Length: 309
Image (cartoon, rainbow, N blue to C red; front, top):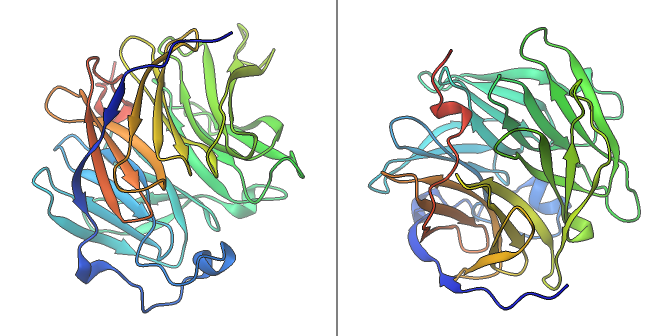
C-alpha cells in the first residue's frame, strides 16, 4: 500500500551539550566497542520530571544530565555504567536501562544510583536498552545487546509492580530497542532496529502476548527505529536513527508527518514536553543537540505525570 508523502517539519535546535561537558579526551568503553573513536557525549533517554526538567543520559561516559526549562545543564551523577533508556516513576524516582549493569534506580535528590534489577537476575543477559512504565506501574524493558538479523534472540521483559514478578514476553527479536504502549495498553510497540521495523505485541485477556506482528517496515537510513512516543490521539512517533528523521504514524500506520533533524542523521530518542505537552524533544547524538518540534496533538501523559488512584 502506498501513501502520499506527509508534511515535513524541520526540527529546531533547543540546546546542546556544553563544551565544558564534552569528554572527547577521555576513553569510553562503549565508544570503543561501537568503533566510534573518541566522543564527547552520546545523548539518549529523554524524559521530563514534574518540574519541567529534561533528563538525559550519556551512554558513552556513564552520565545522567538534568536540563532546566531554560537550557541549563547539570550532571546529576557519573558512574561506572552505560545508561541508555531513562524513565521517571510517579513517585519521582529515576529508572535507567543500563547496557552493562541492568535496571538502575537513581535518587534525583542526592544522586545515589544503585541496581534495581541487576544483570545477575537475567540468564544470558545481553544488554538493556530502553524501558517504559504502564499505568499500573508495571515496567517493560528491552534486552537488546548486540542482537540483529544474524542473531534474532533479543528479549522484552516485564516486571510486575504488584508482586515483583519477572516475565520474559518474547525472546526472538532481532535488536529490540525503544518501546511504548498503545493508549489503551492493549498492545506494546517495539522498535526493532536492525530489521528497520516496528513490531506490535497485542495482549490477551490474561495479559499474555499473542499474535505478535509487523506494524511498519521502514526504508533507508544507516540504522533503524530507536526511541518512540505516543500522542493523545494514538499516533506513534518513531525515531529513525541514521536517517535523521522522526516519523509520526497513525494507529493504522499512515504517515501523518515527517520531522527532519537539521543537525545530522544521529537522532536517537524523543519525549513530549513543554507547557502544553505539545513539543517533541529529540536527542541527536552526532552533534550533542536536543531538538524540538511543535506538534498539533499533545503527547500521552507518561507514568511520571499520572496521579495515583
